[in-house]
Length: 359
Image (cartoon, rainbow, N blue to C red; front, side, top):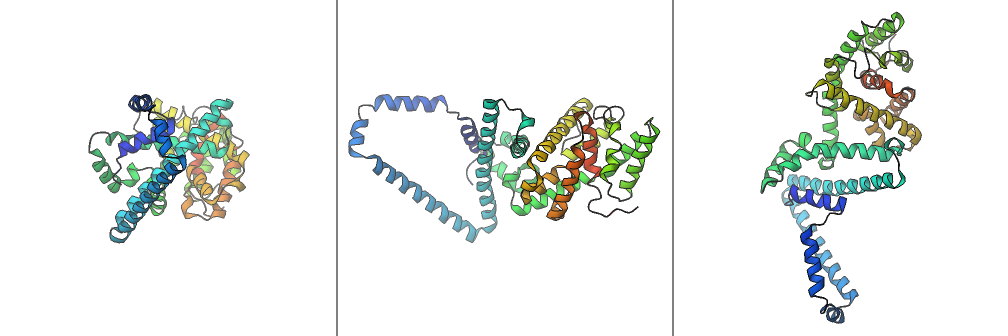
């Protein structure tokens, strides 16, 4: 636990990119040059097997000391032990993710593979890792000054949901924080529906206008809509007034929390970010359709639903599978120019699920 975040950061980039400083290279070269004459003599007195045995003994002793330290913490400081164990396990998971991302990116460069052509799990790994790193950057910057790691640990303890990435959450915190994050997202559902209804009043096509207003009224009255209800209004979302870059600024800002994006940016930047995240989600849907829902384990299934706007933690696995199947049935017909409908459907298809429909 005494390992500073700055040290962790340096080790992380060393392992991820293979970086070695000039100082290490110089020392290694100097050692090789000056010890060349003594090296055969050392080999004469120390066989490779004996050196390996000494190394294993050292590793074994260190592991034993660490185990005793953990037992001491677990017995006398149980709350601190949970924090310590979660932190050390989180470091291991973060390094593992970094190595997997490196392998994926290397494969992409070697085989000239585009992101949209990746398998679903690889695409999701890159998406989640990028979001984790963006969230971790402020904490890493704070930890750079000398002795700032002590402040960092205090901040980590007081504000784990805001400052820490998922690797450093306990299982209980993961469930709790996901529920809190969805609650914040759901607070904007009503505003998104009212904004959609307001935009629908300006639609010139009478048939599409009625279909859109009926859909908004259904959802606002607590009814979970059918996929056919949403597909009937597709034509409204590829241009004015409901495409991502044509909706008004207030509606853009209400949509930002669906992706956990900050709305406190200039309108053009918000539109660009929303469009980018929507395209990414559409690409994930297509990759998931190729992959097949039946190949997802329970945690992957819940995570996929959560990313698309559903509070999956409060639902059964069968309900998650049913909802995600409906979502893919709908999104598989969308074009890149219709991603605004995909974003609005994060509210339309999740606000009342799994409440039964009433006609």
